[in-house]
Length: 346
Image (cartoon, rainbow, N blue to C red; front, side, top):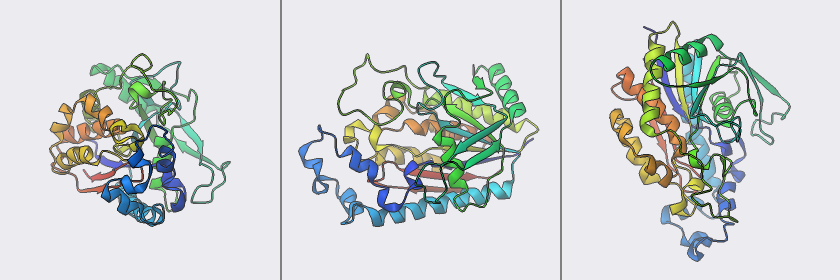
């Protein structure tokens, strides 16, 4: 049987920019005119949030947050290099990037022959925006995966070329961060786009909430695939790949609950408690409990992007991994999202 390495990382966009800019999203959420009066200054925030904010708008905390994230991403990269896969399968969300009003599949295997993309401006590496990154795809393996998924009852969409966007940031940032030290990343990739944003993917354009218009039920889009369905998709993917000729690394790319998706927290801080309720059973190897997680909890806690991890955890359950080899939980109140990291070797 083929061997499979499983990894979980984050594609947190603010890691691309200097520490002084990392709290920019929180500052943007502070412009919400409907914010309750006590929350309009740090004095009204939860104590842990105030402590992280400090007296420098969170700049010192940003440096520590970066250090923890980069340390875990380096561990993931080391595991990837040690494993040396034939290709890397990435589960990532599409935030109104490649899939828009013309079509929004629940999930799509992007079996492109190659991927061309650029970095973001003002990035921490000082790379020009016109620098092009080119990575090979794996069309043959992608066709095989889709064929077997369809045979297994998963009506999977697939593509051979981009529609609106070369490659979403859930995938490009994951690659940039796995190559944080810029030693090169040459593994062929098979990105699998997940419609994590569901009811907000078109009406909110997969991004920040609008402070000028309150969305009604009529405005919302159809929901994302359920946690159970994506858990099963990940399990089927692992089963298919383990019976293939390929040596594969499977990666879930996302942070966990997002402040700007957590309405009950006024879009200021993530639902750390809900994240821990998922992290702790995953850490102990109780993967099967994830399958029963309700879709309503995903939206209530701003955990839309964690749907990528439901694919990963379903794969771990299918592979019979007792518990992860390495696992990390990077908590934050002011940098939009909790981050989790995982390494599970064959």
